[in-house]
Length: 197
Length: 101
Image 1: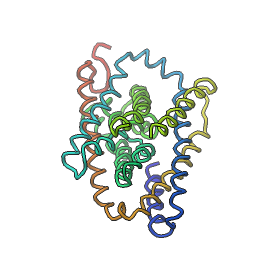
Image 2: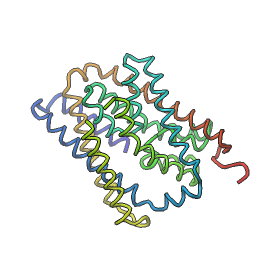
Image 3: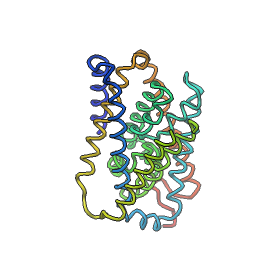
Image 4: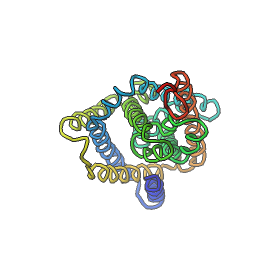
């Protein structure tokens, strides 16, 4: 999937730079919105059909909810810290970080603030998903198993799940899925709250 | 903007509702990842076209890349640290198991 993303965005950037006339670019807006609507509905289907999640949650107990909360708090506070280093406002870096790895939603929601911010959100959240796969073995080995779900944020429940399970064990899958689901549901609200209504 | 947010939330909510009522946990729905894949490719390519056609973005692509990298590293570090503190606080060992379990 990571390869597909990198290939698609590269083809898109080159096409946008060299071939696609500016008068066509506004069609992209519809493609992005339409694509996003399809993805959101399918993500919902996937969350809704997993009955066993709710049973597993009861087995593991309330502590399973503490981890997504910790992921959100850690992402936003450190996102704010990164604003001190970069030529961006803290609101902008926290807004980008609040994408929590959801690289299709975050740039869409930030597009109306600026094209630059939207592009930053896209890249940062793609990096987060790639980091969630590449760094997982290191974190499992040096820090701990549950910490692995923190790397990828929202994609712990889907694209990064195989990497997480193979670096840890099956037990961690339930933490990964629950955390991914909760983080995913929070992302649209978080971005909106950070950027202001 | 809140209208777009409402649309997104409504679609996700509708998906959760339909998924929980009409779909099974056990069955594999191979069409879901397939359609998702196509939608992601279309969306990301279109996003790329928008990025590529915006001269301001293209001219600052290097700075955008650096900022994005720094933000993603900070977000990952912050999340790992917070999850680590919570894990210690509730008394789980490195493999996520409570010592008395």
